Image (cartoon, rainbow, N blue to C red; front, side, top):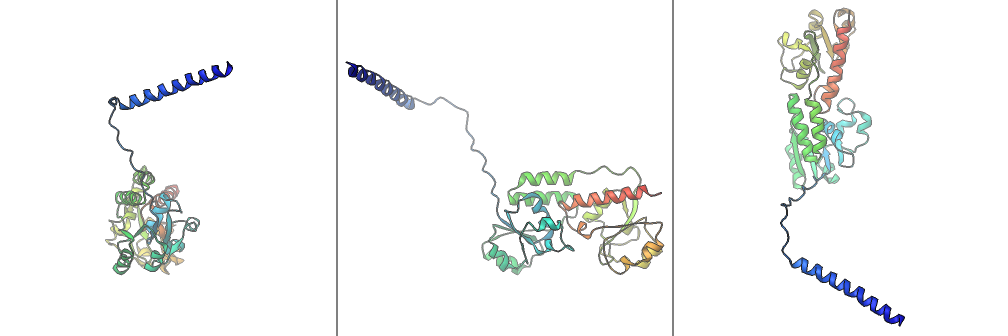
Length: 291
């Protein structure tokens, strides 16, 4: 009797299961209810492995991409005289000497280089199946922000690139006082042209070009004698030539404000702009604080 009740109960439950399965099958055969169009999700951007052969591109890459993605930076990143990034940061990344053999051995997905990359090197890299993208030196803040976005897009780091580009494009408040005459004395005792990135940064920071006042153009030389005979209000010394280190500067230019300016802040855009702005603002404040 008990066994009969158990058998009857099992039959009841099994019958219920069969009915449920049948109902699901019939529902599957029925026409589907209309739904909103479904758009496929955007694919996640790829993060290609990269080798950089240019110190200015090095600085952009380390600001937007992790070391695991950047297989090697340029050898300039390990040279304090030419690096655009702090030594401790550069130490986290590998480097190459820039030869095609080294780059090919690293097997990157992408190689970033200057437009001055030798054609023979580029051809060797491309014959090995590597993608090569080259960039020039930006001559304005806007061009630099665009370059950051372009490098970030290639690296699959669009969000990081846009954040950095926004910081670069955000102009600081201009000093309230009149422009201060300043001469940027670059390595080799030369001056920057007016259509250069560093000259735009100088104007932005409230400095007027002493080189333009002297009628000088890009890479024209300014001797120690010329500086002593006609001193600017502010002398930014970015080189270490004999004239730029001469004791007469401190002795005879007491009316001028002399400040050191790191050469690594002159030639690159990207995050270097942020460091250059900070240094120029510091110098401008020191000038205004003078009695």
